[in-house]
Image (tube, rainbow, N blue to C red):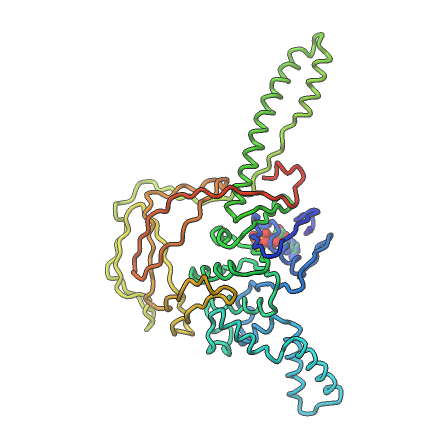
Length: 439
Ligand SMILES: Nc1ncnc2c1ncn2[C@@H]1O[C@H](COP(=O)(O)OP(=O)(O)OP(=O)(O)O)[C@@H](O)[C@H]1O
Ligand SMILES: [Mg+2]
């Protein structure tokens, strides 16, 4: 696949095995979304073929695309053939004077509706929505009235409406709050079909993926495990190539020394054979690793005071909307703080419904969500002394356990210990040319 002169993939062959959950990774612009569109059939590759399962669904990325539609209709749109037939049927039935052609067409449309289980579509959609934690009173509402996390559930219900064998998701956690991301993780971990997901959220990928398909230098290599396992495997391959290169360079230096010392002498044949050996020993071209990501570092000129920030009885409201009640806290030097809250929409101020376990997985619920409340702001402090400076990306960071949720306005959690990632198993499905250098 190429856009103009830019080659995204060259002769890539890759198989996604049933029942596995793949993370599709690669730097910005590597072609992840393009590949996903090729998989879904939205665009074609310039060369090559794609074999798809019969029932494949794509989780729509744009959470606002269906704002004008009812929730239940948005789900039914997951079956495009049925939805088009239902729409056309409605237009024909609303006509004051129906012609003979209209009558014939209506017969055809009823046939399609029957074939596609259209007569139970509303109840099927309601069952899916219920299973995904969308209460009945929201089914008839417009999508625009829903919160971000609820929208993504409706879009998931849409994707699942046809009971797909494969599910494609391009950055599904965009616009989701933390609780919804956790819910989505649980849901996907219990999805029985094949899943391919693109995300820039390393923790999310570690949590849901059994395999990682990494786009690197116009090809795709499939690794076993999540994002950190993939980075570890790539780092190991790179370290091997670097060590091999160092040995070759040493040998080349020795040979060159021999050549320059005896090139004018009588050992012409030995010099020639060593020159040939130097050519043969060329070091592998080690391209810049695509796992060496940029990082942000804050350098403070002088240390702050022991308690750089202290707040007492803080209250804030916008009009009659109370954002938080009297709230006090102090921040000590070296602490790192995340501020987050339950979603709080302006259209629906009722408590969020209890989140149900995904239909396919009754065993792994995370329990009820805290009600959306104007005063439900919580702060988590990580008291580790110093943040380890982000590496140049070549060393994977250990995924941290989710912070313990607390109803208290201020919760502290100690720094989790380092956990050694499990050794990765690499299964190269498509090797790049000179694969040892493709790190
Ligand atoms: N329709 C298009 N026409 C021309 N170039 C395109 C088109 N779509 C994508 N590209 C280019 O192809 C490359 C890959 O784009 P793509 O969106 O697939 O990358 P990506 O890996 O999904 O990136 P990101 O991580 O930023 O989402 C980029 O350089 C992009 O500019
Ligand atoms: Mg993309």
